[in-house]
Image 1 (cartoon, rainbow, N blue to C red):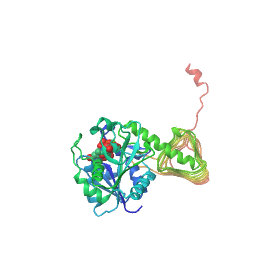
Image 2: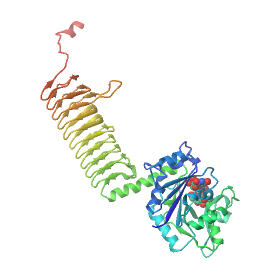
Image 3: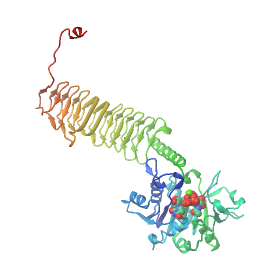
Image 4: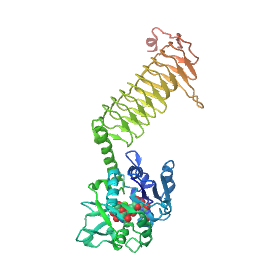
Length: 457
Ligand code: UD1
Ligand code: CA
């Protein structure tokens, strides 16, 4: 849509969160709450997006430092929503179109609703359109006061309302569309003669009505969507609704989610068709998973790219790793950042990896630590193998060639290289490079003492 700008109010502290973190940076479904209205405004065509920041302004601003279309303006003192909007005046100087006004704490608001609001506002050539909703419990919200003919007269805040006004169940969502000229020509005329001694943005409704300008309320069909988050109970409720939406969309695109109420997939994650996700998985928003995979229960995946037909078994934790086709991991494996597993690799239970590349078809099936290593194709890493990569000061690399067989309980003291097609005998501590095609064995020769136990007794 042409000529739409957005102002998002995010200067408030969020006292009821009882937090040292400003409210709008609290995450819901993996993203700070403020991201959602920003995304919705952008998707509805708003540019620029002006954020009014106050409490922890630097933190909020820092969160958007790479987003070129976001302009932050500071509201030094929180004197009310009307004052907050007035702070955006300079940032929108010369802008002459429709201004969307949103709150930073309404993460459930959808792009389609904003588009509808803008279209409605423009179709009626309104000066101001407010998005309203009829709710069972209007407590705390501003009420939409209409005349007998149904025309909007004004908005009255809970704290200023007369008893008969308190009975009104049509509430102000705090989301508006305004004509930019109307907004900035009139915002300074709003006073603070009210119960809270604040400059109320909502007073612009009466201003428009008194001037005989078109001023409308569009009732949103979905009261859930405009829910504001004020405390942590509402934060959890909003996150639950966001997850339900994410999961529903994934299921419609062909992903099987065994129990969507207990699956925690963040906004932004991509998962291919015919992948099955079992309960209590956490998948972050930067992860990409291919099709035909199985993600068992209690798996946590963040920052990973996982190709098709992989199996991540129960209890595994995968961070910033890359898995090619048909890799199997776990149960209870830990892939730490920088792990690259080529096709058909198998990582078994209680294996930890960090900054390694493992070639096609290689296996580490049990109880192993592999860090800072380059491992070739078709390598077998025996149970209990450890790359001793750290000398207390520096990290060192281990290089293992193709087709190497590492027996059980081997320590590889890095830096060290095991040449291709060699075999390292069980129990060996490898301290010098092993040439290709050879056997490396380093064990203390065994001594058997006949009858030793009997003599002891
Ligand atoms: C406001 C509306 C109310 C509506 C409700 C919807 C007014 C006067 N009232 O009430 O009609 O039903 O939202 O949720 O507008 N903010 C600033 N600077 C300020 C004050 C507020 O940036 O000086 C921001 C807050 O951070 C918040 C938003 O504006 O994101 C709404 O402010 P809040 O104080 O929560 O308004 P309500 O009393 O809920
Ligand atoms: Ca509020």
